[in-house]
Image 1 (cartoon, rainbow, N blue to C red):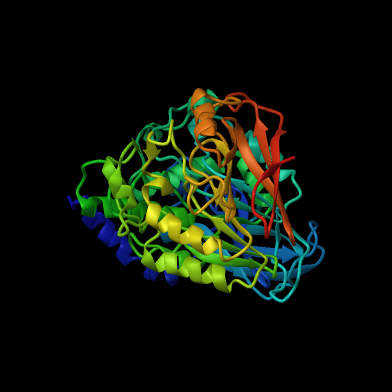
Image 2 (image 1 turned 135 degrees about the vertical axis):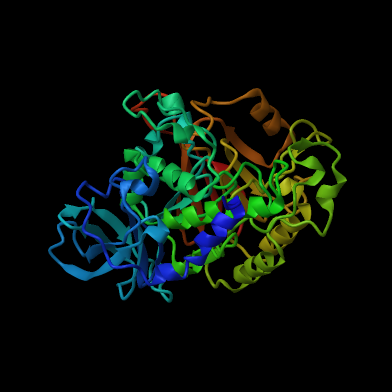
Length: 513
């Protein structure tokens, strides 16, 4: 029997061959579009369309054989497809989990389109997408949502049903699209007796097949499907797409480093297969270029970061630490030098009113107690030199807004170069969105959150409920609404706005409204 790393080597050798797929098999007999449709990374003239064939989503290969399938697609100006302006045929190959990524170009800027897929006699659900405004245009506003952390086993994705009904231009997803740990046959906190997951879901994901099956489970959720079908998404990963709190090539567990890179390669490959991403983001083994930049006319530039793949190992053994001098080491990085230079140069050269930094972990300083109390070494608090570099730069570039996920709490924070001097001007703001479901039902607050508000004066808001952040950018002002649901362990939770804040582009600082 081949060792595990040898099995992956054989699999990766077929990667280039997949670009020249085998002859197509007959169309699937059973409905293959069980995972829905999605679009992403819009440009002024194009967008990525995605689907994946899986007539039996909880089985390896989605219930299909190791064969290719031809899939046709259409993109229209109307939801009834009376005016189809682009169409074509793609190949769903087994090498890529029978996923389909269509990079449609030649579209008009700043307008809505509708799309769908077909194979055999089967037609997918209809998705709606939107292109970015023309590069030289001056749009008056951008409406978006930020979401993260959707542990299937922790509860229902009801927040997505409400998000799908919002009036938005796009959605930022900031990490933890899946969770790698075991899921019970009835879906954990969902207690869904109709689910009956196979026993393979009680295994932690580490192989390509297990990751593919995990994504398939998540994509079967109807509320997640609705949110994907409603808007184009801009996605990035955090840790749970691979393993909790991993750092670059370092596992949090004592495993062989080569074996962990095999694990990471499987996870990265499945991530690309299951989300609307372009070919430049396709992994090469354990490496993937996920950080990228999108522009919304001259109103905003979105810098999408990867704070996992290039970071130094967490300081002082990770977790909450007090008195950790290593966190200030100038040689430690959360971005890696190349990505940090790319970000700083891009902020300077964006030529837009606003710079949105879409990333994973909390950038604002956060003391768990008084000034000498513990700080979280997995966050930017553990990488003080990189944070200082970014915030110093933000002080010279008006309109910096950091969008963050990861922590399963809502926070609103003013960003300062020196958080120990609360009287100094803010150089930007941070909107931390809570989880969609991770952590279960949540609550209005917790004793820890109350303590953080008391000892971190730059924190304007903290909340422990589930939901997402809805925001609107205009030429000179940002408004953010923290949208929350009261529970996720039961269906049909209502939505409400828990808090709202505004900030001005040239005078950053969150004001409660």
